[in-house]
Length: 584
Ligand code: AMP
Image 1 (cartoon, protein in one colour):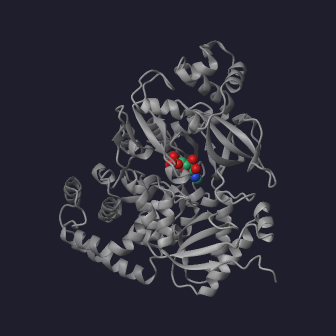
Image 2 (cartoon, helix red, strand yellow):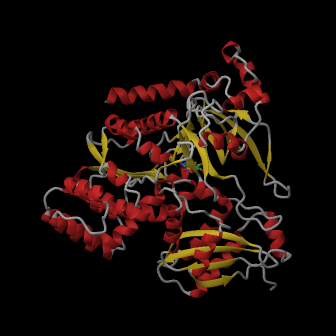
Image 3 (cartoon, helix red, strand yellow):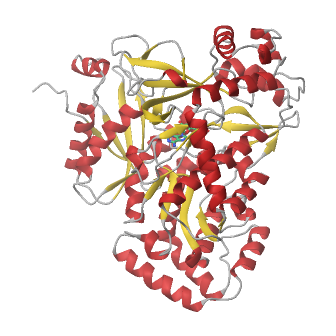
């Protein structure tokens, strides 16, 4: 095992050292493998890339094939979904499509998923596990409390399987191999992961996590949201879980026959001792507002592992509360379209984490972005650069050319180069590129909104209250338009303080377009709406009902979706208007 771990680390170190050459080779392999597909023929003709030298290949590719958005590829992807088996994007027929970022962009998009997607997933899991185990060694044959969920898979009318990327991965052979090869096993059998009902899966994940308590080496999920969501429900269902452990039974909440069968088989005989110990611990935890729940219930766990960056940052404070002194290890950076970078330094705190680009996974280009407040566009762009020409401190949008048939595809993520690992860039995730809050000349990204909310939270946290979740909306139904921020909070807070939080947030937007518009009252005062407990859970459930998977769920940080706005507005219990720019 240790030999295999060092093999994969050696492989990555050598790849990172030769990053530029590896990238050209990756591009050559992608183009060679997909030579003659309709999309490439349109731009490149039928060139034989094997005969070209490196520089000529890269320059031919970037000068002939245009940058593309998802909309440019959509007609091809739609034909694939409809059953066209001619080589449109890839030579290998595409039999599976994934749903990507519906929760961030408001609309779900299909992207091709191939064997390569599962293989790279396995590879990044192994690579990250190898680096992690150097810092936090775990016992072989241990278990992982993995809070993961598959969503429904369906078939298009052309017979193509459709589902989220994580769903495809959990169903793949590679996922089974991951357990064998990393010598750590998930607590929940496949039937639990793919039950299709997140509440039943959560209950069983937690129950089995308690059952295997001694063996649990770490707790994980794809995005941190799912861990927080699961432990919030644990606070409510722990008694029932203890009853099941004590009696060897299974709550009537679990109604799916194969899930019942497999969970009951796994639980085996009643375990009175364990039930009493867990009950005692939970009673104690209840009195401590569940601080340190994870180490208390799973004393052998070494860390918590999940994506904690970007739109997951708001859940960090709750996660740290549950984890107490256990390290929080940030998981890797990728998307349904392609994996991108690996966290090589598991001990770095979530707000400092960087992701080293893996040059064999896709061909990466980076569009330099310069913020210009008075420009009509949100950013000014320079020509896309290859990975070898990036500058530390500069922000870029990522462009992908993948083995799965995406060519110069704009991912829409903004990253900043924090440094290099050998010759491959280490990226900080900044935000999704799309502007989320804009009424007229004002422009704010998800990152801007997050900083503003952080400022408000600083005031809120002076009390014992905390934020459960938040979103926003640019309301232009009345003149002047204004921003609304929706907060769900736990704990009691005085109205006066909430009014202050609202004022503080309004005054914290630094975008000049916003400041100028607020001063001239062409944008009205920021409104803070407090929604009742459980509102964001309803939002998550409404996404899940529409085919999103809990494993990939990200609360939209801004919404104009009428269904969500209806939920938010119906659940609003208090409203505050900022006085930040009132004439004194
Ligand atoms: P999806 O493919 O729909 O699950 O979403 C992929 C998107 O999630 C990426 O494009 C990023 O915006 C975000 N994402 C993925 N990994 C990370 C990470 N480690 N840190 C921050 N954001 C991430």
